[in-house]
Length: 77
Image (tube, rainbow, N blue to C red; front, top):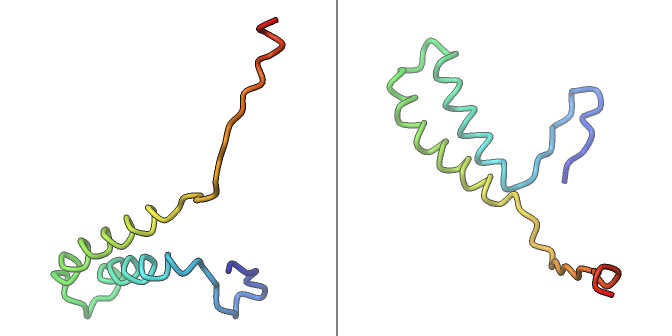
């Protein structure tokens, strides 16, 4: 459900399988940006962020049926 952002005031839509990965990785990265956050929190968030990112990447596949019929008749005459 990806859509054009337009004027950059709208919400960016991403595939549902990526929402958790984006949120956890953003939380992990924000630990290094926000001074009030204990840096030890990043150590606890990193394994979770990696896990949900791996799950999101595993869903990036095409499940459509695929059949290949080689036509080599012209070479076998």
